[in-house]
Image (cartoon, rainbow, N blue to C red; front, side):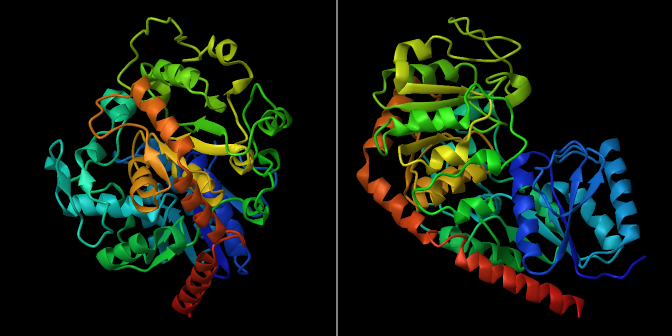
Length: 466
């Protein structure tokens, strides 16, 4: 077996929310004179611009269940790569925790990678330690060591969309699923920065007792190099892209026709979304709102096979297609040029970087959240599951650059909640000012604190090897 040289393996999990940050991490590590190898399942497609070494392993599944045959085959593939050459260390997405023992067998140190933020991890850890599973409606429970305003509430346990079948996160009071996945790691790496989540990074370092490196946000180089006010062209940044009913040029032309800061962008990412009962409520709210909007709807929207709901009930409108999911077929004719309804892939970076965009109705997936924050776009948070719940809390309670799309007492998402949230967000000048202040933190590009942390990580790894 070859001796370790100057190579770092980066092991990604499934989905674009994991793959894209790992691609950017490879770029950053390479800029510090490391040879990087991206280890990825064979069913993930890379952008043609990816310029680093890759190691393909069998497609596998993720989750807290016992190892599967697919994971076993992926492990054998990883073993074969390690027998050929041993890296200095491996940065492993915690969702691929089953790979850690394989690296340790070859005496390769493992760093556990969190592709989401430190606030979400802190809240999950704190909820576990505070035994918050018995929270009642209306009860508030602080987490010692975390900032004021980040208390746990009953709503954190079960947001409206989760209550109606949209999924949920680790249950407060239960051990977070990533805890066993990080055991034996030499440190934790987070897709965030001190400027956004300093108190939460410090909390995790104290609580877990391992080095914590904030190396993000892990967004494309073009994102950081584009001056404020300039457009980021997604087509040149993130390939492959899915089909869409609008081109980037058409989206730009539509945005150019709208006043500055007037457009509400509505998107829930590619892996989650409202329930089939909630989509018509959202459509009705957008119809009654006076604000221009872009609404991105994925194929299969509202269907249980995509969002893990308990099963759709046929809405009275009859808009559900078992093949295509929900689509507001008559909304475009009702709102005219005030709305742009995109089906499929949307140029999100372009939309968020356009000066006409003034608000983002989002599920608060971490990539979407930091993309909006870095461009100074306030957020109306509609979290569905997992870290989204605590990402929304960071935006609303800590950074104070957004609102929740539903009230504390809401039992489900209704048109009234959505409409009130949209009007509140789009008319709040103070929130826009606060969002602009945070945006200025990144005016010079990629986080200065994360650059320093990456240098510290390099020194740590080099010293450990010596």
